[in-house]
Each structure stands twice: as C-alpha cells, then as structure tokens.
Image 1 (tube, rainbow, N blue to C red):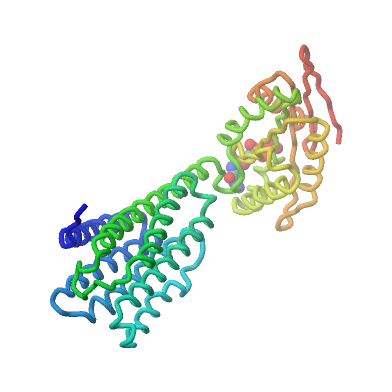
Image 2 (image 1 turned 90 degrees about the horizontal axis):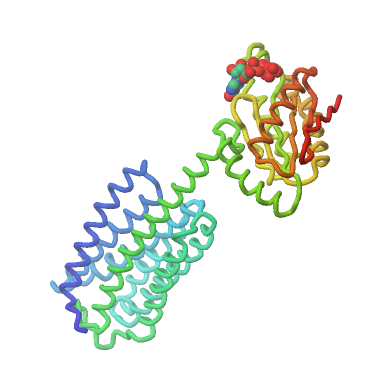
Length: 386
Ligand SMILES: Nc1nc2c(ncn2[C@@H]2O[C@H](COP(=O)(O)OP(=O)(O)OP(=O)(O)O)[C@@H](O)[C@H]2O)c(=O)[nH]1
C-alpha cells in the first residue's frame, strides 16, 4: 500500500489541531483537571513539532531536528506527567529527561548530522517513555477496570513499533527532506494513530475514575465516610444469600447514640459531629469490614453480620464499653444497641426487629443491648441487663 507522506502530514496536522481544541474544552469542562491539562499540552507540543517538520522541505534543519524533536520529547514528558498524576504521584522532573538529552545531543555535530544516530536515540527515548507510561498504568490498575487493557494494548503496540523501527530503519536511504526515508510514512501514520488513541484512552481513564468516585460518593455518608443506607441494603442481598447457603443466622444491628439532642444543645452542633465521628472510629476498630457498618441518618447507625449471634453480642458489648470511655473533647456519650438474628428472615424484617429491640433498650434505661433472636416459629426476646 502506497502512503503519500504529504497527505499524511496534512492529516496529522489537522487531527492534532482538532484534538487540541477538543482537549481544551474537555480540560476546562473538567474543572482544569491536571491529567487532561498535561494531555492538552502534549498534543499542542506535538502539533508544533509536526508543523516544524514541514520546514525540512525549505532547507531548514535546525528547527525541525533540534526544536521539533525536543518538543516531541516534551510531549512524551507531558503524557508521563498525566499518567503520574492519574496514579496519584507528583509530576517530578523525570519528564524533562528526554527533552534535555535531545537538546544536549544536538549540540554535537556528530549526532546532529547523523540520521541513523538520531533515529536510534529518538526510538530509545520513545521506548523509555512508553515503558514508563506502562508502569504508571499498572500502578493505576485498581481504579481502571475497563480502560486498563485497551490502554495497555495501545502502549504495547507503540513500543513494538519503535522497537522495529530501531532495528529496521537505519535511515541509510534517508535525506533530510520529508518523506525520503522508507519508514517516514509509517512513522507519521503510527504517530497520528497513537496520539488519537492515547487522547481518547486518557479521556476514558478520567471518565472511568470520575464514575468510580461518584459511585463511591453515592454509597458513603459525607460526614463520617462510613457506608450509607443504600450501601447497607445493597450488601444485605448478598448477606441473605450467604446466610441461606451456609445455613448461618443473619444478624442485624442498630446503634443509636443516647440523648444526642442534649449533646448538641450543650456543646454545639460541631461538637455533636465530633462525637458522631468518634463513634464511627470506635465501631470501625471493633466490627469486621464485612459488617458494612452504615449511617442510617442522624445519630442512628446499622450493620449486618452472617454468623454466630453470640459473637455479635460480644462485639457490640465491646463497642458499648469503648464508646463510654472514649470521651472526644471530654464529651461523654453512650450508645444503645438493638440486635436481631434469624435464619429465615429477610434483612428488612430483621431491621424492624432490631429497631424494636433498640426501642426496648432505650425504654429500659439506655446504654444497653437488647437482642431478639427468632426460632423458625416464634420470636424470643433476650434481655441483657448491662
Ligand atoms: N451534630 C449533629 N446532630 C445531628 C445530625 N443529624 C441529626 N442530628 C441531631 O440528632 C438529634 C437526635 O435527637 P433525638 O432523635 O431526639 O434523639 P436523642 O436526643 O439521641 O434521644 P434518644 O435517642 O431517645 O436517646 C437531633 O437534635 C438532631 O438535630 C448531624 O449530622 N450532626
């Protein structure tokens, strides 16, 4: 297939210009997200470098060879920054390495005038940056369920292309004008496709991360960061199945801080919030993560468990005692706890029973635990006068 290098060059310039515009809008639309900011700068640097490449045909070499390729290395550095920031690292200075090295090497005529050496160094730098991008992508794996493999594929293809170019494009038949190397058209085509692919991959990565953040935010309580009611009931379905499969009781726990209104009235709403946060930290220390400890609203919390109700009772007792001695900012507080357990009940019906148990704990003087367990036919109330 014959590829016309000039047509490809015009296409690349057009695509880069168009991508720059898309990215500027995406960047400002995403509240100046740094990942998108670095990507935008990379595309603009690539566009200027491609334009400088056209000056070869006017006999100008310094601008395309020295400045143009330095800009290409800066673009790779920007992509590296985008991937570093995405993975949660600071940009650092490693991104400048390729551009500085290229600029320095261009000061030596033996390098500047040798096309094979330039091709070799350019390929080596592209390969190094691509490997660094792959490493950063692997470090972001946890928050990239969908985009990870397409992104890996794109980077691996880019890596293989530059490895092959390093082996087969000696530049021996190349002149300094555009398109005289047999590899020129493939280099332009691959770089155009790579920039398009990478730009849309980064947009997809940012989109996926945003979706995960929104999803997590929709399942967390904004004040205490513990799970919310939606998360608890989403988890309940799985717990019900587990309880049936393993023939173990399903246990619902409801926690309610005692006389919380008077804590707010005496110490103020901020201190009330402080108590809520303290209680959550106490519970998180004691309850295993699979209990999905959640805030139902106000000063009311709930959790679930599949297994021995006696174990739940002793965990709740530990929570009750720790809350009593916790005293955040010297504020004393206590908690009443209702527990309900059953083998054949839905979590919603157990929550209603646990609510009744909680009501009885409150009526019985607060700072205590009440348990309702159900045999298949009848409900039994177990009072723990603590
Ligand atoms: N600081 C703070 N207070 C809250 C929050 N949400 C609800 N409240 C307060 O929690 C208090 C709950 O009061 P009540 O429902 O009367 O319960 P209580 O005073 O704990 O009484 P008992 O439960 O019967 O022991 C109210 O004063 C609400 O304003 C919150 O996010 N932060």
